[in-house]
Image 1 (cartoon, rainbow, N blue to C red):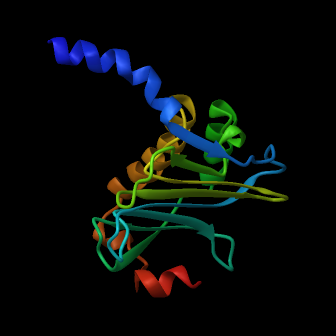
Image 2 (image 1 turned 180 degrees about the horizontal axis):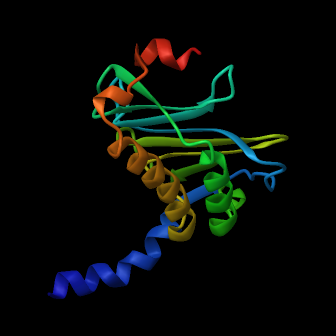
Length: 171
């Protein structure tokens, strides 16, 4: 119990161990695409989401999980980007910094990035062994949870494309 108490005292200081730089503009217009990845030092991400409209305007959700080399694609709801706009506004995600890194020299670990493109600008944020403060990170997590809920509700019959991760990233 004492160690838990000591950890709870240190928790507020963890933010002091992170260096955050760069800024993002306020969103201008509606969101048009979203990409997120969470990586270790392996070639394939632990988690990857990419949501865009195809040439016909239909929303397509692509994802990869657990360092698989295969990306799966399902159709998304027409109001997907309306939902993203609401999450971005609720959590004020334009306040994300461009980069988060630890103040200490860390040579291994985990990296992440989130990219939300809007009609006239974008929000980009990434980190290496460091993350934004809770409320901002909860916003990124809210988007990812929404995407994951759509994936979880899909079936094998909903998959409209399968591609290799590295080839998919070049699109």
